[in-house]
Amino acid sequence: METNEAQAVFESKLANNEYIEPKDWMPEDYRKHLIRQISQHAHSEVVGMLPEGNWISRAPSLRAKLVLLAKVQDEGGHGLYLYTAAETLGTSRDEMLDALLTGKAKYSSIFNYPTLTWADIGAIGWLVDGAAIMNQVMLQRTSYGPYSRAMIRICKEESFHQRQGYEIMTRMAFGSPEQKDMAQDALNRWWYPSLMMFGPPDTESPNSEKAIKWRIKRETNDQLRQRFVNQTVVQATYLGLKVPDDKLKWNPEKDGYDYSDPDWNEFKNVIKGHGICNRERINARQKAHDNGAWVRAAANAYSQKQNQQSEAA
Amino acid sequence: MANALFNYILRLADSTIILAQRDAEWTGHGPYLEEDLALTNIALDLFGRGKALLEYAAKLEAKGRTEDDLAFFRSERQYFNAIITELPKGDYAFTMLRHAIVDTFDLLLYSALMSSTDETLKGIASKTCKEIQYHQRHSFAWIKRFGLGTEESARRVSDALEQLWPFTDDLFDQAPAEVDLINAGIIPDRSSLKPAWQNHILNLFNEVHLKPNTEAFMQSGSIKGIHTEHLGHLLAEMQALPRMYPNATW
Image (cartoon, rainbow over all chains, first blue to last red; front, side, top):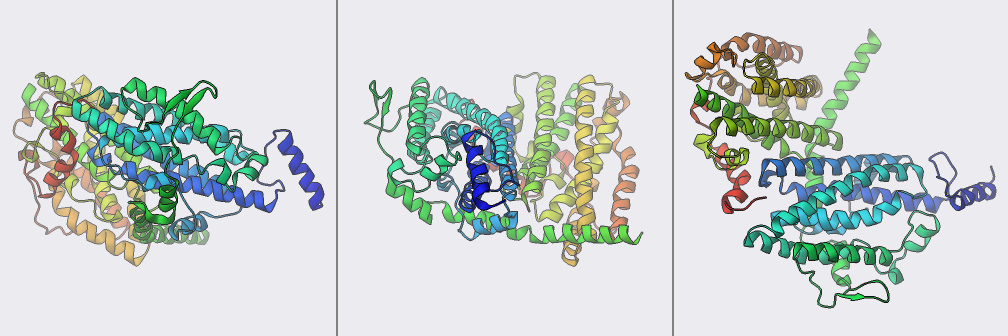
């Protein structure tokens, strides 16, 4: 098929809301954009296991331990589906991992913030997973088939995580005075980083326009951020917690809250690697990878020996 | 006898929870993603079993303590886990070899508990046996890969065996008060499990050219709440929050 013709088929699939599948022709920059986005998402899931993993050994009840462990395991599972989805675009897990460890590939900046109290585990579920869902719900209808199918599965689990996070916040916010303080402090620290999760303002988002044209994204960063604010303020009010924004005010004209922008300089700094945990996160991944090298080598050597034996037999 | 059963259930629960706590240290740090998920799953099974056992212990005790009180408000000397479970996680060969040893023991123990005259214990045992079979398949597969994989992996698993072997007898120790429970058909005689355990585990070792040091001095003490120094640190971390805020509910 000529490229022009193939391009026309691709465009018509987009126009008709049909999926693009791995064997279909696709423009190179569509492929690149997807590899970047999906692998970044996969890395975020896997690096995201670390801040929450920080509390597994200290979860304050057996039930809390089970819930948190299952949640962190789900995140690893999401990483796995997403790596697999990205592999259908012609990259490999090793390549992606290498890009993460060398800093070529990014992951969600929010995971460079520390989890300092148990309330942070609640706040991550409530706010960070909540913000992630806003992004991800739209990705269930994204144009690339394997990505869309992975996202449908992921979204189901994420909304469960968000409820679990909110449950922790509820127990903290209605608990002892110390617990309530921890809950408020967690909201104070996670609020703006959560707003940053939607990415830079539309006026400064270089990749958004194409992503929308290709139906990789369906709504802009600012639209999603606004929806998140509207939803979360109500939830915070129920908890008796104060959103750390003095300018927060209902605006009937836009049928949404006016709110303060996060500090975009901080955002850029953390992306550049200056968050309090950036180094530790990558070091932890690097260390796991290095310490696992002999384990993987043993597994490979063993399976080769088994194959040789079965061939010889 | 009620008190003997309470203590016995604590023993089962403590070994389970302490091993789970060690396994869970790998979550997010496993040798590769699939294996990270597999070991996390095993830790989840163990915490689930530990919780069920402590709920039963709390009920038997009937003093208003909950399963969380039992997990988070007992100190080193009140924990009766097998010593082998509390040893630091080590490398992956250590973690997997400990699992192979404990899984094999657990499978025999809980299989026997499936014929317990105590209905609750019987119920917990039948659920957990299916899980342990899977854990054992997993740990045995790794010991084969390590033993027959590379020189390095064979050396590591052999080092792990040297460290772990002296703690294997402790699994079979029996408290004097347990005799009544054995006679009542509630629990098996641990010494009766030993030949089958040795058989399974030595077969595995033979297959992968691992040789335990049969001259090694065997440690014991868990039935009296005697431990290595590692347990205190594990508990300090695990129990920090409930002890810091004893009146909070989480």
